[in-house]
Image 1: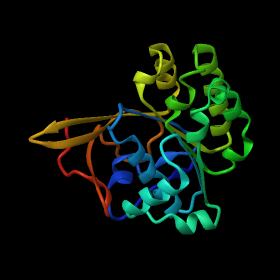
Image 2: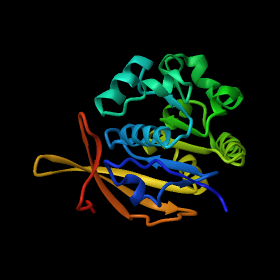
Image 3: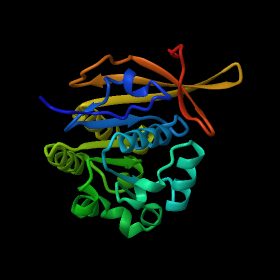
Image 4: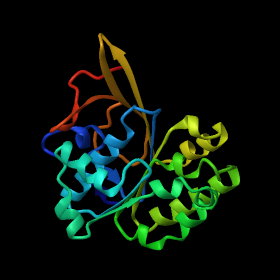
Length: 231
C-alpha cells in the first residue's frame, strides 16, 4: 500500500479536506487564472510538507529568494530552519524567463537539472510561465513522461498553471495526466474576494475529499479555510 504524504497543520483544515494528504507518486495540477491564489496554495502545501518531515524543491517564476522568504514569513510559514537544514531547496527562475534563449530551451533544461528532483516533493509555480514559449503537444508528452518517471520513484510533483498561457490542447494533456487536479476560482461578493478550490479529480485518496473548499488569505495567518464553501 502506498504512503500518503501529509501536509497537516493544526491551524487549518486543508489536509483534512484533501484526503488527509497526497498519495506518493502523484502528479498534482493546480489551475487558476492570475490572482486566484495558486502561489499561496502551494506555499501552504510546501510548509505543511516540511513540518511533517518531508523535503521540498520549490521552483518559482514569481519570486526571488528574498521575496519568497518574506512572503512565507508574512503568512506565518517560517521556513528559515528548513532552508538551513537543506530540507527546502528554493530555485528562483525569474532571470531565466526574461531571457529569450532560456525560454526556448527551458523544457530541456528542466529535465536535465537532476538536483531539482532529489527532494520528496517538487513544486513548480508556475509551470505555464516557464514553458509557454517552447511547448507543443509533443513536448508536453515528453515533459509529462518525465514527471511520471519522477513520481515513479515515489515522489510527488505539483505544478501550477494559468490556462490562458497555453494552447487548449496542451492544457488538456496536463489535466488528463494529473492524478490530482484542482481548479482555483475567485469572485467578488459584497466587495470581498471569495476564493475556492474545486477538486476535479483525486486518485487514491485515503480520507474525505471536499468537492469545493472555500478559503481566504490573511497576513500573519496564511491560508484560512472558510466554514461555508463558495460554490
